[in-house]
Structures are given as C-alpha cells and as structure tokens.
Image (cartoon, rainbow, N blue to C red; front, side, top):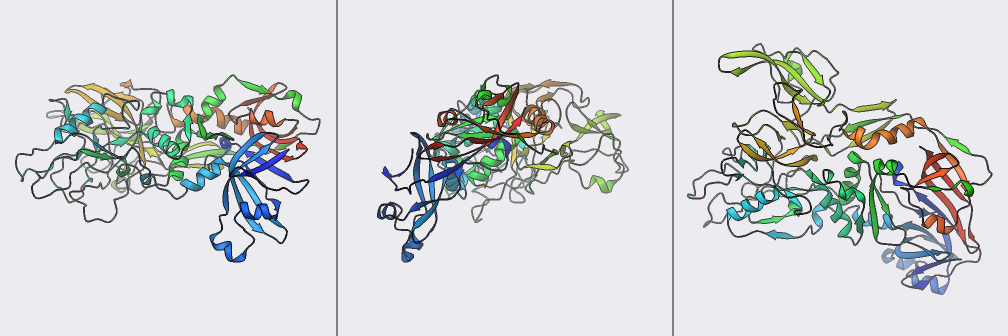
Length: 584
C-alpha cells in the first residue's frame, strides 16, 4: 500500500504504480549533502491531481507554477517526508520525483549566506567601553555552553592597512598587569587607537544555528566532546564604534551582531566545508525535522550492529572496485599574507635568498641573507631552521628556531582522490611580542572597522581559518587567553622537544593528534583494503525505517557499512532490496 499526500490531500495513483527509492549514505561522499530520492514516476492527470499540483498542464500557468511541493509518501504506513518535484506534464500524466528532507533543506540554504541568519540578533552589553571589555574578559573563562563566541589575542599587523598606523598589531591585546583586555585611552580626542576588540564565533554554535534556524533539531554525541566544541573561526570585524562629533575617538562598540563576524559563505558551503576536517556526517530523519551529527570515527568505534545474515538472498554477490588512495590538501585562500611551507621534504637544505622570498615569516637567516639547514620536527609537524640568534646580550648561539608550520598535502596510497579542505589551520607565532605572549595565532589580513571603513561598499574577505580556544594559560607575566591550532604549548621555543600538552587534537594532517589520524585513518584503511559488495536482501519496510547509515551491518562473520539501498514500492509492498555495502 502506497499513498502520496500534499497538504493532507491524497493524490490519485495509476493502478500498478511502482516507485523506485534510492537511499544514499553521506559517509561515502564528503563533498555533498546527500539525500534519498526516487527515480521519476508518473501520476495520472486527473482533476484532483491537477488542482492539488496547481494545474501544471496549463501552458499559460507554467511561469507561476509551483514545481516543488512539501509531500509525505507512505509505504505500508511508514512515512517518507520531503519534496515532490514536478518534472513535466503530458496529455495524460504528470512526471514527478521525490527528494527527502535533506534536499528540501539544501534547496533553502544553497544560496542563503551565513550572515542572513539571525544568529541571536544584536546583543547589547552596557553603555561604556569597560562594559564590553568586561564582557570580553568573561568569555575567556567560559565555554560554548556559556557563550557563542570568545575573545583571545592574535596577531594581525595588516588589520587596518595604512588607515591606522597607531595600531599595535595585536587584536584583543591582553593586559597582563590588570588581567583584562586593553582599551584605548579616552581622555582626549587626539588619543591614538592602539587597540581593538574582535570576537571569534564557536564553529559548532554556528553549525547548530544553520539547522535550528530552519526548524531542524540537532542531536549527536559529538556535542559532548568538550575539546572539539572549543573550535573557533577567524573573524576580521572589529568592535570599533562609528564616531559622531561628540564621541571620543577610540571607544569600543557595546553591540555584538554575529552576522558581522561569520565568513562570507553560503550555509550550504559552510556545512560542506566544516564537515571535511573532522569527517562530520549529517543523518536526517525520514519523517522528523531532525538531524544527527556523527563522525566516521564514532561510527567505526561502535560495538553495535544489525545482523542481516538471515535476510540475505541466494543470488550471487557482485564486487565493485576498492579505492586507490587519497590525498588531503588545505585550500588556503588568498586572504592571508602569510604563506606557510607546503612542499618541502624532510631534511631538505635551503640555502638562498630567492627561496626565502617564497616562504613566510617567522624565519631566520644569517648575515649573508642565506638560510641555514631546515628540518621537519615530526612530533610538532613544524619546520625549524638552524640560526644564529642573540639569546643573551652580546652572545650569539646556533639554535633551532621555528620557520613554518607544515601544511604539505597528506598522501595515502596512490592518492587518486583529492579531498580539498577550505578551512585550514590558523597558524601560530611563538616569538615573544612586546615581552608578552609565548604563543598566539597569526594572520595577515585586512580587517573591517566602522571608523576607518565606513565608506566601503563591502567588507574585506577574511581567511577561512580554524583554531581551538584553549582557555587561560599561565605565562611568566601572568595568565592570558590562549588559542592554538596545535595540541601543545611550548615552554621553550629554542628547543622544539620541550612542550606541554593542551589536548588531544591538532588541526594539521599529520602526527598522532592530527586530522588524518584522529578522524580519517581507520576509515581510509577500510576503503583501501576492502572492496564494496552488492547484495540482494529481503528487508521489510520496518527494517528500512529502523536502519541508520551509522549502523554497522553483520552478514555471516563480516561487518559492513551501507553505501546505498535501492528498492521499489507498490501497492503489493516492497521489492527485494539491492544493497551496496563496504566491508570493514
């Protein structure tokens, strides 16, 4: 028994109507938000169907025709919610296709920008500069449970370009003496603007809002991972207050509107790109406005499985080719003047100034302008250069100094398939700045200020960078709020082997805490080592509705993950299910 409902009205079906369903797993395609769908099928052009579908057969009506309808398809009393798309009309029938809720959601967010969401609206904090400074300080001891964003110091000497030469070069500069953020002097109109404030939004708050602002409930055990929840996104919009003649020149705005502090991306682009570093998967319900966010790591670690051994038909199994390997690559955009080393090999000797011009600061060279030996330090995944530095007044010593983070592409197997990730790590600079910070994020990117950029039509684009907020850390001068894309905090920057752990995760590909090892390795091993198999299964519609793509399937002694399920539904029930599954 099948039925199709639009606005609680049931469409007429031709006797013998059969609908072919395809259910597709998101675990096998990182570049799309996958959806269940049907192959095109026809409905009779009855008066009832004409009316419910808005008279699609009338030529003069085609320009204003609604081609997408919210629909519920029932198969043996189990409901598939989604959209029904009118493909074409003939003399006697209408061709339509069904897409699940993922497609309906994707059609809404395809062109909608992140900044077009409400994101909590304008948040107001007091009336004075110190009120917003105190709020910024409060976020440093909180988490995503307390605040949707956080303030921490980072270096961006290009924030104002040539418009504010008095800028200190540190956004959210921390005052170790008073244990708070610096604010500008406001006693005279002539005081320079040395400092500014700029909040960075928590990535998983933004992810939640992408769904919840569109009526979709979000769940998943991933939200209990406290370290991952501290992931933040770089922002280049300052809380500089637009001036009027009676204002002091350098007060901070008391309003935070997160729509100003998110990347210039569509919601769809953001959800696809934020998936990639951690292989996040969005599993939508068939008939609830609900999505579960899972990682492939958690799927593989689960001990739960469904045994379909007795549901296997006697037909032959057909093999599909296994994967030939992957190459993981950061797509660093052009909105960052710092270009990291991305192609040096281990133990390579760099010895001329021309090469130095193609790589970033911080780097060190001798009096002749030539670099000393450059080596990759594997535990931290960083390049160090042997350099003569003045460690004490009047004394020169040969020491290893940080040269660059390693963002080289990470190749597995033959590297036949590329996974390109837009959200790349926000680089760290460990050199001491004004005697204050042992480590802060660094970027060279033009920012936006209502004081200095009020006549500009568009905000400057900002680099798609990620880092983790690591909380308050003790330094020689006192405590300061630390953000870091790596999971260690160096205690002595002259010796790379001396460092203190900050957590379990790094935002670089290699080493034990890196993205590949933490989120991809076991899955890629399975894809390369084993082939996918095609089965025919005798599943009931209840089996299908009780199934999730995160479920492991056991057939005899082997375990699999389902890549695709395909079946036909008619008034007689459902056909045997064709299943493509990958062995683990």
